[in-house]
Image 1 (spheres, rainbow, N blue to C red):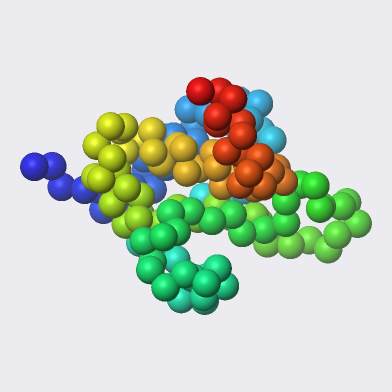
Image 2: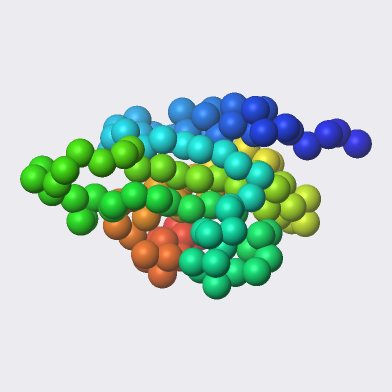
Length: 130
């Protein structure tokens, strides 16, 4: 049985998945940074009312593009967090997709929040795409 990727290997997979997204999509991401951690921190989980750290596989942290203004003070770069262990667990449970595909799916979902899309918007887009 193959060992799951460690955090550095997982970050490499996330970077590769991001680099395979369409050029226009990547350009629209601007200075979004992709971060990887094993789990969301307690403060984040508490914010969402979650007690099980496996419930959260990714998070967009920043101000979405629909809310930004050129007059805003300079802020930290927006971040997309990928949580390795919840993603690995989902991948193992599903068994029907590659890990890179699942990472890309979570990544695109969180970047969707950067564009100002809600979870409902993204689910509708996914359903329409089949």
